Length: 442
Image 1 (cartoon, rainbow, N blue to C red):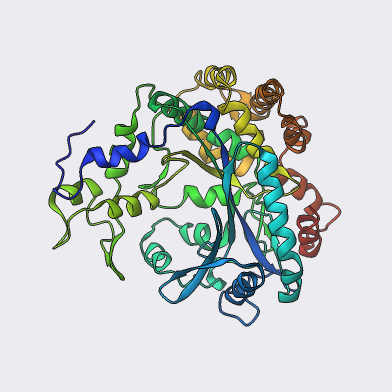
Image 2 (cartoon, rainbow, N blue to C red; image 1 turned 180 degrees about the vertical axis):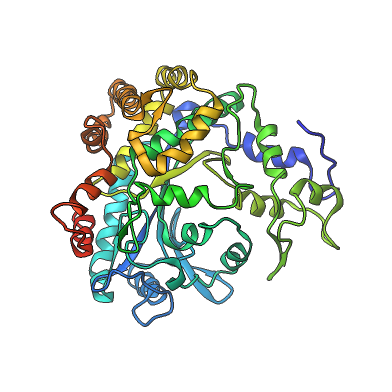
């Protein structure tokens, strides 16, 4: 690891301790999910604004009052709700995210999501909008989507470079999966395999071809938007090195340009003028590096797979038709079985870093029609699903059933986007009303 001088306020060992504290015995391993949905008006399908009378802010207030949730605020603005370990938060364009406490069983998460959805159903109807499980705004584009009044988002929007960074922030919705690890060795093996899997799984669950009322020519426009957002902090955090350790991941974070730091109620803009390693060494103006600065900075690092005191896999389109549980089951099958993990490692290690990295630039347009070394991704996807299915069967928790919605697609070599495009250019005759009805029919 590159040598980094440390200020008297923040030591490298203190940072590394974050990750070592994440190590858990295998019997305690759980799976977690964060998934975002698009708030679309029932009549126009435009994105719902934060401040309008029947907008997101007043909806959250009513939900909190009726069901006993606590406010999450940024200065004086309501930006989310919490109840015990579960949260409902807002992304920059008011996309609504459920973050569910990790559980051992997918059923427990599914039950909780269904409870929250049922609580919201009548209130959503009263407010005249729906939460749609789709990965890019189908009608409203970012220029007509106001930014959530959260200070962090304003600073991000002003800094993030890339021609589609505003699309990523304001228009897109994704699914993130969280998995546990037993040790540094276990974490790094899972981290490496998760990175190798990334473009394959992005392709398998592509679900954002129609944006702004037109066929974009991409099956995952959400994935395309991430390709065109600040490459300093997006993409892969590793080149799949087998000797990669916690310190190497920290070094990757330290070498990312900083956006801002926070002191009290004040945000101090840095806007890329120095990397975090330089901040640790020399400070910035009168400020010295503190642990809160590292925590903030690491949260503004957006690789395909992010390491915390768990592993966060971030590269999926928001999906409907119960496919969210297929994503969870897929990862549980692979990462919570040593045999399955080794099988996937062996399957994907035949491809180089450059070959897999190049997939990230083909998958948004072609999804499973992409090829790697003349092998169609659809064939590799079938093998990955087979490995996950066998593993879940052997785990004997009856969770292989959650893979069935995805298997219907993968066995036919198609994605959710392919079904949408087939209908869009056929029976629907490019009618946005029919697309929205389909998306809301889950």
